[in-house]
Image (cartoon, rainbow, N blue to C red; front, side, top):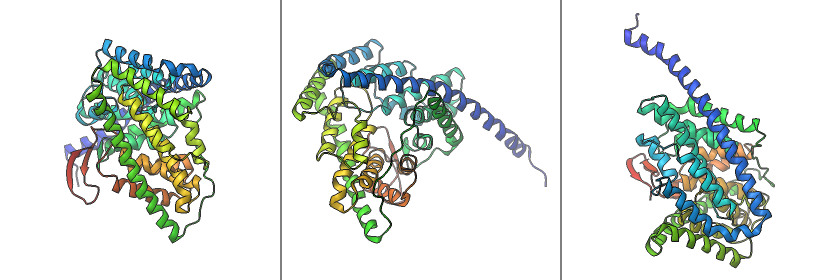
Length: 418
């Protein structure tokens, strides 16, 4: 049996393609990993500064105005955040390099003055814009440009959170629900590994959590997990609806972007004074840790949603995923005892299940549970995420996310998120 010229060429090309992506992924991993590590260290610095100097909160409206003016000067008034990254992958739209420093600086401003937001929105844009720009310098074609953008997302996410498998799968799963970009598997995994190793070189320690009172399997436990998954799906919908409603309300009542930022900053200050605590300013990492240890205030999950909606809707920069972690973990810690689950175990389950519901990334969520919680009771985490994914409907944090297939049956629908 002889091989055709076409078959011989294919066999010869495959090692070259692998070599190409190994090289590109390493370059992206090192470059984006360094920038992401710089962002992480800067983020930690401004957070400590805010905690040391409580008066900085009063400057939040001025910080919002500064962000608006910064984007205006750079010609980025119509910035759509992470949605632009999703469009870059799906439709090969170019991501300008200036996105990286803009979102880097503006996210630090948000957190320095006490805005309620995460950090992953910034890091995905930073990674995507840098890798997209490198792709243009290398004169990559449209298909390869999409893959290299996903590499940047993977490296950035991995460097920031210390979860390389989660980062790689998230980049391939987030764009089109029901379709995984398997052609990007090698470059995304490799760039994520390189990115996280770069961050570890600079002494960035990845987060892992211990779960207290881990239960043994029982059929009753199974029913409790199903019930928790349903409740997490509802909370996911509420979270997404708040994120949609806030910008719409600002558009209606405060259409001027500068005034909107000032009003939003003042709103966060007023809400902080009303609550009598600074727990909802910033990303809330310490509150997430406390919830996973089994301690959370009743209503904390709703307050965090409200704080985040006011902040991001006003034009401040940051992300929604860490606030979703916050809401999920605190909700789980509160509702767990009601369902007969330990608050720590329930907080861990709800944290990843709400993340799954708002991002529509079940495989990412299961792997996240593996990397954060050391693989204990993984079937229960998978079940809770699966229920949350199935029942959270077609809502999403990102309007540019597409649902290629139905969540309920194997039917092609190709619709945008609500």
